[in-house]
Structure formats: C-alpha cells, structure tokens
Length: 205
Image (tube, rainbow, N blue to C red; front, side, top):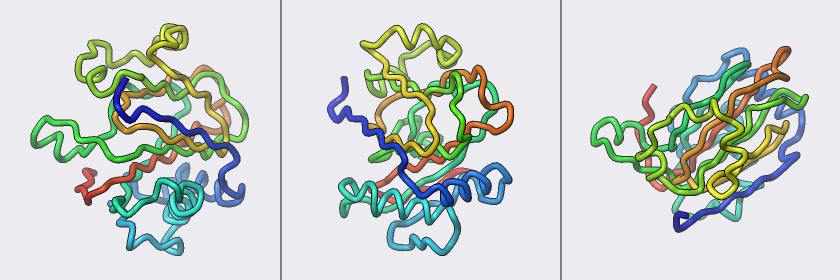
C-alpha cells in the first residue's frame, strides 16, 4: 500500500440538468479534449459547462479537499461504447515525455455523466500497490481480464459505473477501466476526469 491511499465515492452529486448538459456536450464533441489547464483563480462557471461542473464539484462538493495548495485542474473526457481503458497512472505527460519520470497530480476525480441506465462491465479498477505496480507491470491490457481483477480483492478495488457518481482517489494509484459488456448500445459510457494539481502543467494535446 502507498502512503496516502484513500477513496471517496459520492452518488447523485449534481443537478440532473447539469449532468445532461455535460453529457450532451461530450457526446457531440462540443468541448476541447483535453481542456486547457484550468487555473483555479481563472475558473469561471459561465465559460462553459465543463467549468460549471468543475466549480460545482471542487468548490462545493469537494471543498474539504480544495486547500490553498491546489493551483488548477487538468481535465479530459472519455466516451466509450465498447472495450475498456488500459492500465495507467495519471501524471504530468509533458514531464514524463521529457524525463521518463511519473509525477502524479494531487488528486484524481472521475465523474460519470452517462448513460442513465446501468451497464455491465466498464468498472473502474484501482490497484492498491501504488505507482510501482504500473512501472513493473508486464500486462498493461489487464482490463481485458475482469474476473481476475474482481477476484483479487487484496490488491484491487472495482467500482461499478453509476450515473451521476463521483469517485476521488489517490493519484498514485494505477487504474484501468474493465471492458464493457453491454448497456451502451444506445448511449456511451461517458466520464469527465478532473485531476487537481499543486502547480501549473503543460497539457499535451
């Protein structure tokens, strides 16, 4: 286990009309992905729906985490109807590209914006062994082995998809999205990820 291992899960986080607006903007590709680095002191809920969601989540729901060390947020979206997401650690991608060193953010938060219905598969799987599990791992496509992960409760936590759910976890945790089996035939699995940083970073596009 790593030093700051923690996990928060909040359900029914935002007003449904705001969730629907965010979901629609993501599906219709109306927002840049990733967003430019959003500085905390420049955040304006009138700029776009993404800024409004960040404000609602980080300045209201997560105000207990929003201390003076947070400089801003790196944000991106995922919209998936099939497959999953390989094992990774959220980090300063520019720094990693230049120095091959993983520098994680202070916090990682993931918000589920759609679909409203439940889905089979598509769980967020968080490994409990820190960055070294990712750097030492020989199977980056482990998301294709959902039963192996679900049975290994000593080393993994799996969190099902749920509409309007917010997950906040230690940014040193390697994680993946298990392959989707069904439930996205009409609407994709849409997530909005917000990483909180104590410094401004250059976001690679």
